[in-house]
Length: 495
Image 1 (cartoon, rainbow, N blue to C red):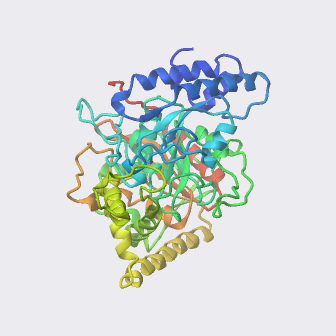
Image 2: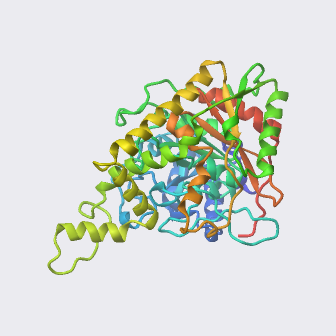
Image 3: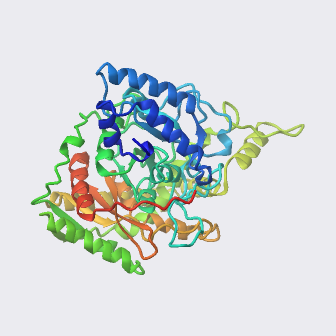
């Protein structure tokens, strides 16, 4: 078999079970692809020794007939997940040299299932960003290009390295995290599938925290079936995470029938934004028609508090970030600034944090500290929390009225060029999350499915939002949409 790195998880799993290929061969194909793609800057800590060791163990396990679905499949791990003995920097200078003595619950679950870790993937610093331009490792690059233009495009953020690596076939799948759209937006920008599960479905233990009430891990894969396979391995109750749900994990793959007859799909009028590109408007309408043709009933719905979602998110997320990032002080681990004679502990904190945190992280910490300060707590933070409750109630009302899933665009544009949205106006960058942040504020599952190309040949994604804990049903609706859209385009290889 040639081009083993281009297989999907399901194809590779079946090939492994049939004895057509070994995990070592799959892993070597991916390692070779990774080494040839340094220009994409997707993998930032390569772990070939660990990968080959795990692949050999997986081959033994498959031979013995004791192999879960993920066994022997080579994947990438976002740099936000702590991995024992392997640099886990959250793409920040302040965690330079940090090698945890423990493994995050999600990466441990994947390892226990026999998955092969190829290395750590690029991301925005502390997951703060929508374009993977805030990383200490430099920009990750999208494998897609606009027509014949060779300008480098963003793979989206914060899980930009994960998206780029999966789209370029450097790994069969990757882990991502999503605080305001950081799985779904990069998935849409790179023509892959990304699901953010219900808050509490995947353990957050051992994942470097950004905003604890919003963060959730999920898989980034080549298609919906792969997302179902990988999500099952990542989920499950974890006593080490107090927000982890004690719920049985269904066999998500078995729920992919593609039958959505009688399902009610809501189209929220508030997502029709001024200035939305005509191609995205058309794709959204086409997506609704595809689901209708598959037997679903399309209904217009209202989510009246949507317009307040972005401002509420950009109060709550920085507030939680400023609290979470207070632990990075240069005392216990990570980088410590060089001190001048006579400097005390206050100077050490100040210099370490000034050197260690990038501009975007500093900006959000300052915003977060401001909205939590005595005079502004009620005016900003408490008000944002109340708005969040109203946004959650909007969704509850729609779901209690019988709607099974909600269809929206995933992003307000296709991938933009690196450097096109500069620091001059950070709000422009924040607007990229306009369709995704509501899902995190309400704690709901959301999935981005590639559904078409724009006029310049760049991928466009549609988002489906599901009922809480019903990822299986959501994946099945996404599966029906994927089958109808028939998206098979891949980026032309230039790297």
